[in-house]
Length: 474
Image 1 (spheres, rainbow, N blue to C red):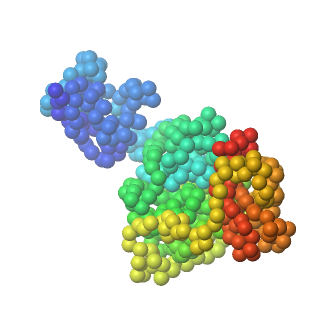
Image 2 (image 1 turned 90 degrees about the horizontal axis):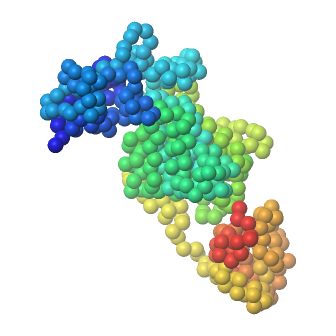
Image 3 (image 1 turned 180 degrees about the vertical axis):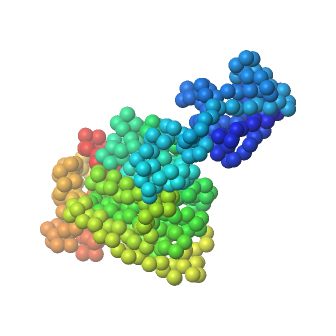
């Protein structure tokens, strides 16, 4: 039967228990009482226990007036109404009581503490703050690493993906040993090893209109590391509705953007981009590629902006859009204003709850014209039967060098409007790209010119997965 006891906390430990002088817990032994205390106050656990789970040498525990070392240690039974006292060593001078930082943290954050712009006050703000990173990929990797190193108190990460070999070119949170492992598991292991003072909270879910506000409410700053338009608009709207600043970053090939959206007086993402581009117009990084170092630059800027917001220092990128061109090594800063007619943050908002962002971005709409499609299995059957058709590849030449289907003719999509005359209208065209998006647009264009064009669903990626594994995936 469990007994109810009061655990008394000295002044030095109260900052790690929300200022409480005592905490009521239940258990059968002194060890049970401490376990229940730590379950309610995670910060105390880090202060009082070694990484191996043992009481630190400067901590004594008493039941009423008796030292448990003179009894049965943590196995000492407790009775209803007992008082458990935690008595750590104290001394004058600079202590965790006065600074809010442990001796180890004072050493760890020394380079921050000697900067007057940060100092003790700024570091304590970081320690008492919480940040939610949406994504543990290219942007989320440097963002999470630097926020953890900087000493943010609680770092939440939303992701539901697993680590793939193709991630390792840019997602520096993960390693070759992490391939096949949950990104959250991989990230938590890496971040805990970097700074055990930071509480890393994994959220193994897809961010949706149903869960975003509930997730955001427990964090001070939201850092947007997403890679698609529906989630980006979802993050923006949820930040506005929840009153949370959005440290924004985006990347493509050699170019990146960064800003701070959704503050009280600043613009939101919709003020800058009221509507998303049509589906397929802007390729994803999976189709268009990204320089592996680029998310390191933009993600680090997001981390800087997050720290500035928390510490209340400097001039955050509120009302400004930072553009970076890695190929030209050029930076530009553009002024952006809050749109009074913005449907979510304007004077008379029409969006007062989260919507269906897949539909908003046009991903649930059916194409205006029906494009004939063929599976990779049916394409293989036609090739085996030696049927007469032209297999047209509309990817870029550098992609064609990586992987190709034998017998295909290459005309990149961007050149098709000038080179379609090279194709015989009397022959059937079967068109493919990497995943099927660009080839669908090619088929629409060719149909408008009078060609009989069929799209290969899934593209050469599906061909490699289901027909010929010797064709490299990229």
